[in-house]
Amino acid sequence: MAEAELPDDLGELLVGIHRVVRRRLRQDLDGPRLRGAQVELMRLVAARPGIGVSAAAKELHLAGNSVSTLVNQLVAAGLLVRRTDPQDRRAVNLTVTPAAAERLVDWDARRSELVRRQVAGLSEQDRAAIAGAVPALRRLAESLHEELEGA
Image (cartoon, rainbow, N blue to C red; front, side, top):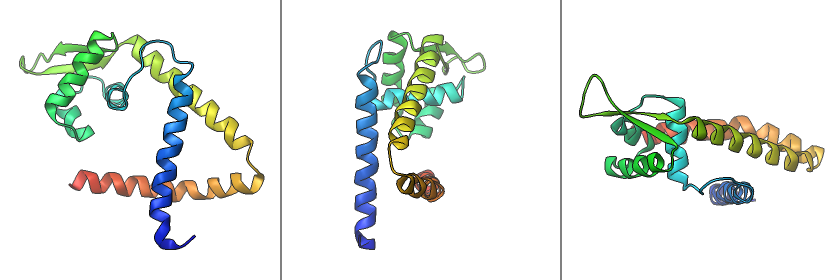
């Protein structure tokens, strides 16, 4: 593969892998299907309980009104709790519900099992190549995140 083709091939592969994993996991999903942005918001709130809408919008690089819409949808679905911030009555603090936390844990476990099973089916040479690429892929992800944060 020519070095010039690598970014396009890598980007296409990562998107394709993500799409197939998501579709496969949705087949056995209990409860309503969630869009990617909804799941990203749930993950953020689970990682940072009490985060406000503005901070979540900034972290997710979305408009505040878009995050407000996502919050309303997830509250209606019983996956987020919105409480008035005691320090600033105009703001809200967000937390995930036990159902959302369980859903995230279940999704992560099923995703790990799916990927583990598929990787185990590869040749030893392919598994070693993937393992060798993980540190570089992690640095790429960090670089992309840093660039986005600087934007």
